[in-house]
Image (tube, rainbow over all chains, first blue to last red; front, side):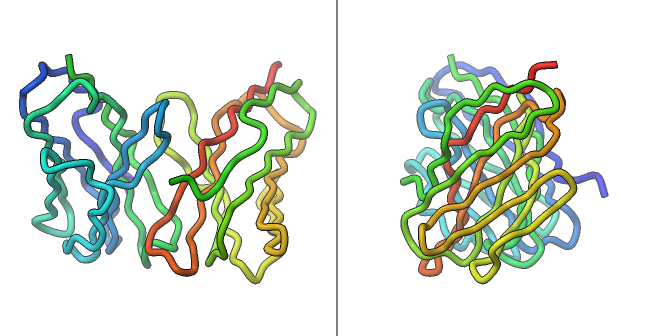
Length: 114
Length: 111
């Protein structure tokens, strides 16, 4: 298996622009997680899905952030409008059983908002 | 909020030496996991230890769990330069619904 795939790997955008991050989980994994990593706040869980349904979105910072999972092999995290404080590395991860299980991380998307 | 806290924040050793990192947490847990992150990469799972287990091994890695002290340790034996990375503990609280990561220990192994 190719592992968790994320795109793009790097994104540089201007404040106010819409940003869309993409993730393809490992085939057969029922859980998908979106994390954000910054020096100040460490690794934070933003949202996770089970069988394409959002289960816990309490970590989504504000309404500018939205996430969807239209099918078992694709998810997006959208920021609209983006702000400089959104600059971070965004990781997608997937697991087979549930949130207690081993999580497999993608390589991340480094987002810079100017 | 952070559930696990790693100690030390940074550790620098020579190749061949053993490295020990500690993790403390606040509430009762379902399991505790250790992950490694190389610079600029995603996290890689190392070991998962359940609350009813006390010790697990995987190659050069040894993890212990003391639920009475709410702490865990990760021991890397005979370290190599390639072990240079950040190491994170992550916990699943028995009353929770997510995996919560600590702030990590930055390990540097000097050749």
